[in-house]
Length: 179
Image (cartoon, rainbow, N blue to C red; front, side, top):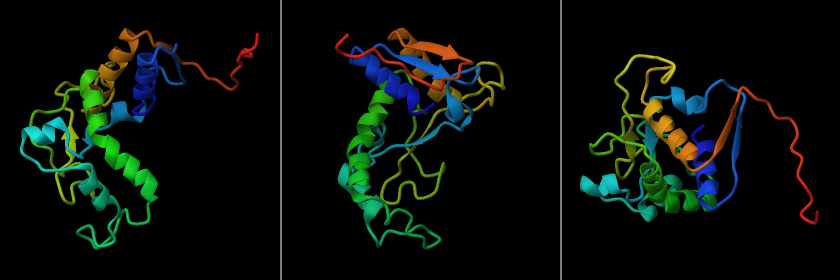
């Protein structure tokens, strides 16, 4: 899915031999069926293109500041682990660029706040993948998640990642490093 394929690509980029074991008949997980809305900010190239001022520090503030609340008054993120939120804030822009480098095409328009709640409290951060075809084997839901996951799958395959679809794994056997 949305975490497994990027992890596989990153490992393959580092020279690791990667096999994805997928219980389903297809790769992509729930993200393949999603609307393809991806909340990533902190100063992405798309934010910069459209003059949206954002930074890792502003994103971190939005995720941890007790005074930042949603329209319903809920302080969504204030209880989250600050170290995790700092790491998230510092890496969102590079994650966006990683997705683009691996073929994901976001709509060429300014990020917005329409895809989720607590997105873009201080800056718009919601990016959208678009799919304009009907449901099919390529796109089971006929939604934007297809244009998020299919490029990542293609990138992984191009980098030598092997896919075992319709497989289930219960145990991993590893050779001893001394053998």
